[in-house]
Length: 225
Image 1 (cartoon, rainbow, N blue to C red):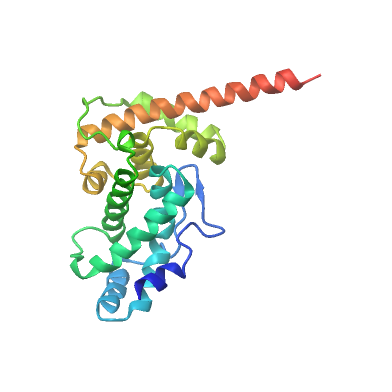
Image 2 (tube, rainbow, N blue to C red):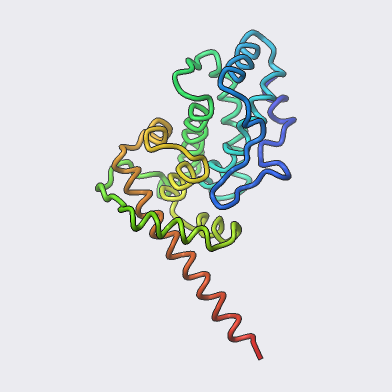
């Protein structure tokens, strides 16, 4: 039953809902946790068609994470479909101790990791133990100024080029607006590793954006008469 519900829905961002400057507009984002738990109760009680409400609510942000973690769009689609099936199967065990979105991000994350392992992409798996390296306020301000100056397309292109461990935490922190604690809950990374990956990811992303901008400027100079 759940397969037909998920298969009949577009689990990728719908027209009008897209990633811009690290902000995701999520369908049905106005739903409260109480309203969502009401829907969960109906689904668990046997109203499987109501699961479509949950899919629509979570699809955009779930897609943003899956797309950053997986190598291709098709891989991300497959992983997200599997994640929704697992979400449906696990709903009776959802305790409500965390938000539904955080709980679902954990499912998406582990599903993507399992897909990567299955396809022998062990080199892309997140390293869970790295030295702690904190970013200072000046670096954070510089990073915010950088992302404010460039187009969404350029920013997402640069983000996709980063190693998975960096683009994953950047997506969770900036796209999904999650805290370090919530990212730890989803990824099981130590807080120090999360901060390290955010710090290094910001550095690499800023370098990639600056390099692309420089190439663009040089290209215009060459083509001008």
